[in-house]
Length: 321
Length: 257
Ligand SMILES: Nc1ncnc2c1ncn2[C@@H]1O[C@H](COP(=O)(O)OP(=O)(O)O)[C@@H](O)[C@H]1O
Ligand SMILES: [Mg+2]
Image (cartoon, rainbow over all chains, first blue to last red; front, side, top):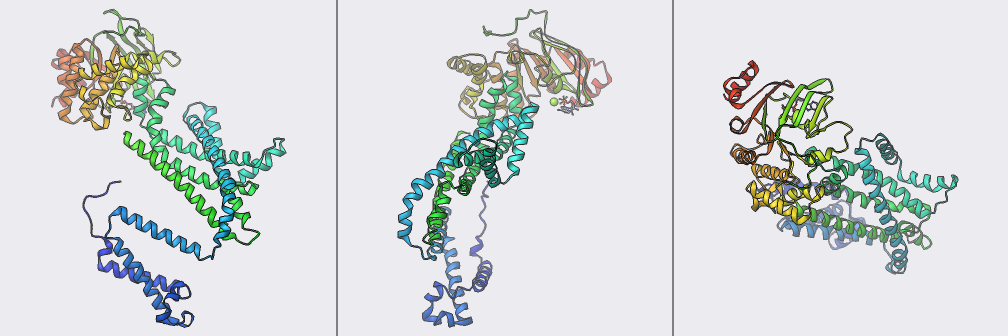
């Protein structure tokens, strides 16, 4: 993207905007009414018993929250971009923690269950996702080439495949494979069934991504290669794919992240991956939120790892050209 | 310095390197080439000109079968170009082509662009391919750009790299499709000079161009096309001083103001 070299006044430094923002935020806080929460408790010296404070209490709480919010934004606006980003991230994360904390979590319960969650759940999730990612990528390369070829059979099979597997809900595919194949005499375990469904479904999405990436390379590249006497495979390998891969990487990264999370569908087949353990471990003690939030944090951490890897690869390709 | 491993038999001065007989080509219902007869001998320099849409690109692209013709025959060094031929890549390796839009490989450096062909399909080893690439970049006068990427070069420089890339294959024939049309005016001459030098070295050249100064200086023959037909062909002197057809006169009036 192009960032203009002329700097406009920051909206936050214009009085009109500040006043408008303050009023809007005040209205929102007032409507949401935080009087009976921690915030009302903090203001007890001013408003008295929060539950009894009525309109005045509600307004006072909203006003204080609004001032904190707007002053916070105003202060942040003076920092450099990178610092701004860091501060806002930390603040949002703290808010998220506060949200989680409000459930009255029992930390010792989390601690006692986390080893199993990681050794069994995380391991299985990564195992299923990693294998599916590799298979889906292979399918996508073959599918994309088939779709671009002028072989009628290859095109027909490939387009039928992408149409079908993009057209069915993943959960339905999962059941069709897990319940359907045994009736035809092929026994499948839950894990292979999950891997098959994920690979086929994401292979179909990625086929389209790869096809579009390859097609985005200008015709002139093919023509120049042909004019030099290069054959199809050589052109694809040495000329087209190296140019298409940087285009393909961001949407493919998205698919990997989506697949990682969709591996949680395997839990409906009783596979002991993260989601399954999150649902079952807390059940007996009615400690649902503990386990669900733990699983949430693990999934989130995993996707951040994938995002970082994707950014690294993108950076590498950017330097090259 | 002819490649010892060239694929097409050497021609004598007399037999044509390229010959077209009764070539017709259609895009759907639209006839892009009608009844083209043309012979090009070794070391000959041909300039093809004509109004936009007259089929010049189509014609030149049929010569290495980037386009398919439907009727008539095209022979390159005695090998007929047709749909079912097995050795089209062998023929193409002996025909260099320079495009209006350069079509360099943007992910490869200038040097790698020039080494790719010989190294990947001619069986020349890396060090030899590099040696040859450097020599060709010297010939087009940009050896100092060898390690840059194409988009770091000006249009004129890119086109000279494209010429060097083709020359690295040590082709028998060079095809040029309006090589200077996409260039800023001040870069046209550097590319034309490169082409003139190439002509002096004895290369067989077929150039689609509207650079009439170049045509006058270099061409053995000028072929004038209109609406998919060859209207007339003549030596530059005759072509400019004594055009035979009304259309040629109109075209020359327009292009020479
Ligand atoms: N791929 C194509 N499909 C349909 N028509 C085409 C195609 N390529 C060229 N033509 C048509 O063929 C005619 C000749 O084109 P071209 O050889 O590019 O002309 P020139 O190079 O002389 O300007 C033009 O009328 C053009 O519109
Ligand atoms: Mg043209």
